[in-house]
Image (tube, rainbow, N blue to C red; front, side, top):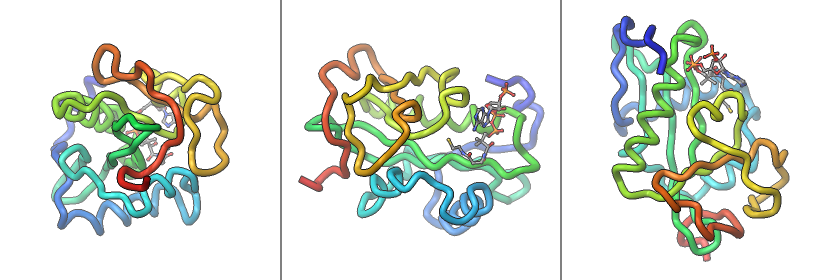
Amino acid sequence: MNAQTTTLPLEIAPERAEQARAVDALIERAFGPGRYAKVSERVREGNRQRLDLSFTAVAAGEVVGAVRLWPVRIGAARGLFLGPIAVEGAWRKHGIGGDLVERALAAGGAAGEPFVLLVGDLPLFGPHGFEIVPRGRVILPGPVDPRRVLWRALRPGGLDGVAGQAHVPGDG
Ligand SMILES: CC(C)(COP(=O)(O)OP(=O)(O)OC[C@H]1O[C@@H](n2cnc3c(N)ncnc32)[C@H](O)[C@@H]1OP(=O)(O)O)[C@@H](O)C(=O)NCCC(=O)NCCS
């Protein structure tokens, strides 16, 4: 996306289990206590992160960026939920956030996943193909600004007929 990234000594790769604490700490710093959308937390609670589709950006051995993906169901349709995404303050505005999103989308598509849902800012995710979910088409487990409920297909027709309650797979 952003040509500057290629000049940074940075490696983007799937999240490894041993990076979990560093990623958690980065997320905590980036969002501050209680700043993530509570509703997103509910989609993650009791869920199993897709480590293979989650990515970290590492510079000089330190995790400076991360994006996490989770399985989700909307009605009967299985797909992915993206979030959180965070980049260390000093490393922002170099395209790392965008590159993390693109890596996750590419990996999700390659894994045959049909769509990605998230709660986030359209100016940030719109350039990566996300659109506002039509009002009422997805019911999240809590109150949320409908302009921040975004999704995109990972393949043609990936969102066809997708509608209903968003929940953790296996949740009924
Ligand atoms: C959001 C975040 C991950 C972006 O990381 P980054 O490495 O700076 O991302 P990029 O360099 O790829 O920049 C993405 C673009 O989105 C913009 N942007 C970043 N956050 C934005 C936001 N919340 N709303 C609107 N635009 C935003 C950036 O200004 C940049 O625009 P530009 O390309 O015109 O300069 C980082 O700012 C961060 O960790 N923020 C705190 C946590 C957070 O808010 N996460 C997202 C929740 S929706």
